[in-house]
Amino acid sequence: MRILNTYLFCTNKVFSLKILFWITLFCVVAMSAYVVIPSYIANATPVIMGSGDINITASVPAHPRQRDRLRIPARINFSGRALGYQSVVLTRDGARDRETTVNKTDGSFAISIPSIAVGFYTFTLYAITIDGYRSKPISFSLIIVAETIIDITDIIFILPDSYKRYDCSSVRSDLNCDKRVDMIDFTILLPWYRHLIQPWKPVDINRDGKGDLSDFSIMAYEWTG
Amino acid sequence: MILVLWRMSGLDNFMIFNFYTSIYVPKKIFMFLRNVCIILAIIFGLFSLSHMAEASVIGTNAVPRYISLGEGVTVNLLLQPEEIAINAIEGVISFTPDILKFVRIRTAGSILGPWIKMPRLRNGDTISFAGIIPNGFGGFINPFNGAKQAGLLLRVTFIGNKIGDGFIYLSDMQVGRNDGDGTLEEPKYSRVIPITVRAKNVEWQEPKIIDTDIPDITAYIIQDPNIFNGEWTLIFYVSDKTSEIDRITVREGGTGWITTQSPYKLRDQTRRSLVTVRAYDTAGNMHTLYFGTPIKPNYLYYYILILLCIILLGAFIIRNYVLLHRRVCPPDKEEDITINSTYVALQSITYHKHINGSPKEENTRKDRKII
Image 1: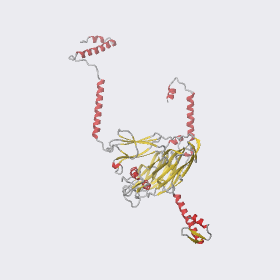
Image 2: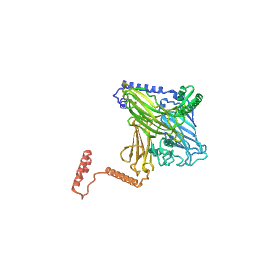
Image 3: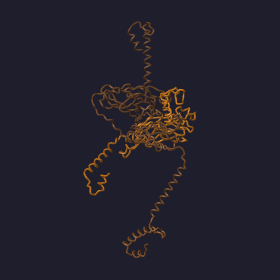
Image 4: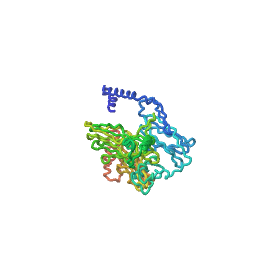
């Protein structure tokens, strides 16, 4: 900036060839970056893939400014039906990310992450009724590519005909009874890893008299974030 | 058992000696028993294979068979689940420390976490680890073609320390199925990874990682009878996709920063201090979280503070007003002579200034009496 100021605003300085060389080099690099961006990304066609009960569709919209492509983050849309439930919760890598209300008339829901960085993520969705009953979670891990729009559709949560209101005893891993299975419960269980739990305590989730990987496995299954 | 029987069959064409019962049995009966054993073995083998096909695989990246003295090698431990997702893993990695020198463990980008047992070097040659994957891991799906990719567990870097045959051993690997029953199984894995160090000196440098993203923090301040006897405790989990977590520091109110781990018992159990959690990664990025005071504050302090501010502001305005309008005033007749003399001196300065400035005023000023 100092050099630029000097050459732009100082009348006693002459626009040297050295500066001209650097500007030319900059232009060449910028133009090559524009050309090198792989064109196959722009022409990628949506692929529909069944993964259990869900459909994953990935697409990359054509963008007039290709050079900006790699800077634009991805977007993920989740949609489906959860008739009878009140809300749907989305967790990202085990941490609660966002929650949405289910449409009361048709049970549809939609959650969107408008901007997500490139990388590897595990997403989990589960639905909750008004009296706290939690559905079986749907979990999947995805590779996120820049500027991709990923639509995850047909996520169906079916409410059983008879279900119990939320109770601590029904969710074994909710050790502090706060209707969540998260880091707090994990911290409560952690000191018991590879230790005997006799006489029996609630931290012995699988009731085998010891704290081991099996207890943690059940907790990971019931994890709500 | 089949091999033993098969071998025994070659010993005698007519009668076979049974080692267990110590009697000779006719050849036909033996042949019948042998065939039954073979069929059972095939069925058992097929059952085992079908069962193994469902088992998950813990493998590594393509580790070079030969490295030079001083050259580094990074072993990426990977998990490839098959039929059922995996949600918990534990295992042990050991190595020959005289041939391979341990450099570092990296957990950035690992699918594991929170960690039950953070992977660390123990006893100079053993790395044991355990962790969970919340809601399970069934392979990273490529959304464009549906192909599944293995997930990274951890990376361990070694350097060729001495010429010879070195080994990396994987042992006690166990995974938990994401079935809600806590079912544990032994995954398929290679138990020995041989690495031979050759006599060629190499200057090796670990590749630098560019990371501009801040670490992720999930933190809670809770009171639970199971943790620190119900005292206020800070629980946190920090992760980073690219670089390692360097340190986590906590500050309560105006006290200094303390490097700590989760769970952290708060010093100020009254919960009046602002708690600040700060996580740094090895690339120098930082993420800060603040926890305010949950207890209702005493508003009287705030009222007094606001009143003091208003008084201070009023005093400041008055002071400025006074300074702005300050001028030299004429003395009263009863005042001390010294004050009058000062006034005279000041007036004379003004007088002379005026003389130099405008001659017209000279006449008017002459009329003034100077005491």
